[in-house]
Length: 606
Image 1 (cartoon, helix red, strand yellow):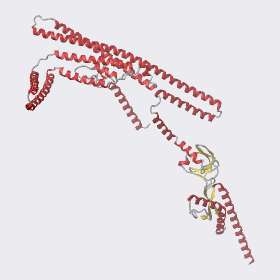
Image 2 (image 1 turned 135 degrees about the horizontal axis):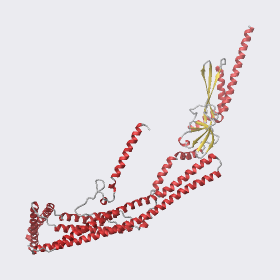
Image 3 (image 1 turned 180 degrees about the horizontal axis):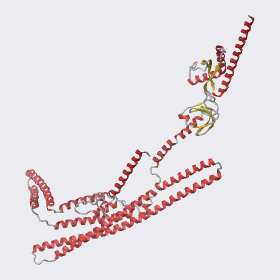
Image 4 (image 1 turned 90 degrees about the vertical axis):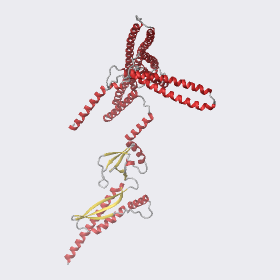
């Protein structure tokens, strides 16, 4: 590993460590119920109240209801929602009564706003009285004055609307300045009622299946494991909700004790008390008794919620045990598959030892069978873990496309076999050339063609001893030549060195005549074949006549003969031409010697 690669790996390790640490520190944001967390902080999702009244009991019940699975859980969730809804409604009622009991001392701007509110209330009463009088007058007046009364009535109604808007704004300002929470409580209550109406309209009516029936749908190990984790997390959330209900019950108990003490102190009759003070004291005492009744109702609801969350947790624990039972069954099946795969591999190896005696073949079969049994076992294990894919047609299409890409050579080889079986294909003992390799076909199968390589056709043509294999796809995407079928022609070339002292021109004529006589039949057949192939009328453009050329070679001359022949008789034609050329050259040598002898005899006589 070089230096730059080590630096990159080090940087990646640092990034991985930092991200894992950050993910661990910020894990609280992924909680289902962040307002149930005991700790608070910037990352743990501390509870943020929506308003004056604490609505956590309802938020908790509604959030847990969304996580239910079985019919038993849904019933418990519905009961928890009913109790939590009742408890929050009572909390609103208690807050409104406590706000009514509080009588803040008005001064400054608050006093001015109070006077303005009183004036607007009186103005609204006058507007309502005027509208009533105009409405009654419109019924008694004649039709001639009906239009005038109608205009006055519309104006009075518009003025009443403006005064009501101004009164609402003044009451809101007065509540904000004086600290009176009744107006905000009314707004929160209205918003809650609207939200509850929408929630009830959108609530699902599906009661679900029982715990055992719903567990039967978890047929795969992955589903069972995911369900077990979900149940474990939900059990923890329900336990937190139970603790929250207990804490709320304890807080309500303390409020009730303080309220009882205040009521007892208020019930004690003072020594000197006027009639108006007594009436006010009794009214406050009655309001406190009402609040105590509400507190007692809320306390009872929280206690019922605590018991309900306990039963809910027990139900989730039971469902968790059912899922654990299914997990154990799946693990048993996985272990059984592994044992069967091992035993099957061992049994097949024992069978091969007895049936196959060739070591190489036995080793190959062992490898194939081991790989096959392992693949079958892996497929069964994946089916147990993940199940049968739901999008089977799509998956089959993708698998088919992948197999087509992987085995495209074998598919082409199979299709090429049909082409090679045709009249222009290849057969055993044919002389062919495939991808530049020439040889004799020694075996022809469904997917492969085997050649005994014979080297270059224009060279010696002797076997090299190598056995070459080709996939039959060369018949589709490659090119091949078969020199053994009718119509397969080749140009051959031989070269002969002419020693000094032999007449060249007579020898050339003799060689040319010998080449023409020897290849005449092949040349005619080749020209006829070319004519048939090119569909020409008359003589073809290609000539099959041999050619004889001279090439200088130092002190001697080379004769190069090029002629057409068939691959099957190539060697015979070559040997025949060589024999004729040798005879011609020997005849020329005898003639030259005879002429030299006659010349010497003539010179002697002279």
